[in-house]
Length: 264
Image (cartoon, rainbow, N blue to C red; front, side, top):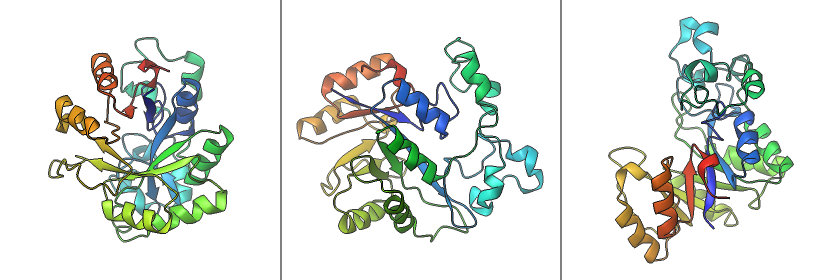
């Protein structure tokens, strides 16, 4: 059975990279959720995808003079003062509010949702006896040299979350190799095709799994890699026909914004 990976949580039905989106994905039967780690100005770990937080928070209303400064220039307290949920109803990024697919009571509850700390994400994953795919992302200035791998592993040990509930993915392959050499018990997944200049190279068998960008590779090539015995989790797979095709060729998992569409 294919593994269903909820991209930034169930972000078609809830504000992405929030605990609400994670809980929604879990309720839909996703096998795990995927999220992005970010480092604040005071070296705290939170969940955030975009460097500038304008798309998914009200930072432009609260700190207008600092927009579009990256999250790495804000303290944890400043980031926690933001509303990371109200934008979802206003922007309806996947048209699911207009389609009536989002429960109105849940929608009202998204207002005031906070940017989660990574600690909260770990604790929720353990509470649900679930699984988190944590993407280790390159950090914007002034945190470009921050030891993301070390900080994440220290926090994981402190919280008590291990390989039964956590794996790591990244386009920074050197980070994954460092992590795996120090902590071989954790699964590491190489993200391919994140940027246009990144090669679609499936040859480094150091990695447990490859997560290829679907817009950068043909289904035929993915099928050939599966036939060679590779584990693939293509991203981001939202189309019904494509979901069926990829399941048909035997991919290991699907990274999707629509876990509600996928077989469970």
